Length: 368
Image 1 (cartoon, rainbow, N blue to C red):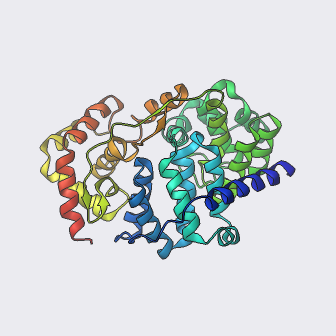
Image 2 (cartoon, rainbow, N blue to C red):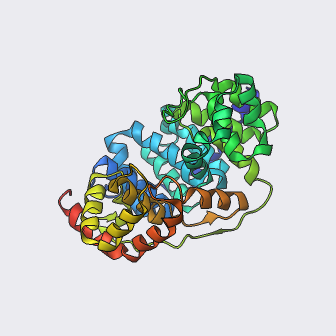
């Protein structure tokens, strides 16, 4: 573990030096919202590079549940920044689980404000989350996926480090090696595993050491399904400089200081606003009636359309071939409508964004 210890020291030194040369952020007015809206606002603001809103949401969460805030920041780092900035992922990972380090660097707000600003301003990538969605919605129930999940432990490790069958096969093998039971992936066949064996196997196979050890520490602190995928995606993404550009963002209004895109399926006012929108939009109601997959609810469908049409959009997103492939494949699954109708559903949502935001404004007024 000499390399891991040296890497941690390198990351702490880099974080400490950058904070020291950056002017401290004053305390902003905290975001007036419950923790679910605040968490959504933090993540959407980081994706869209909206630093003032991100700081206000961060302060809300820090004051309400500091531990929950640091966990959320770690998840955002792997989900929304990913392979685009490995040093920043490392900084978040070492800071989120070390109270003493944060005190040495000036305290929770000093470190949090710095990292939130960095997350807002950096290049971004969501390939890890797109891979996760494909594993849950497609690969895990495919014949190949079921075969991987049924392999003996050593064969699963071999599949996890074998890059010839594609990221989907690798990712599922990685989860099964760590253990789908340990990861609480209840929609997949349950496997027992050993996280240390998985990360050690990646190192022995020559995967980038920094990516593996950051993922190992991230998994130790988050116990989440995204961090184990980081070294697999990073290995594919490295080796070339990728251009970055902004996604075409949907129209956004501020409602009581909260960006409208934050009023989503993860919040009470968001779900209420979507119910109101469906009651007013015959076009969307007719579309859902014609496109619904068996057993899927209006709540899931409109919530996932919102997620795909506006929630996942980012500024400064890197463009690379495998990342674009994963994004295109993930965009049409898990919504609750037939994949061929997804583009039409997204078009309707974007066409009616003014009505949706009006419903959000009316609904949120009763929650604030």
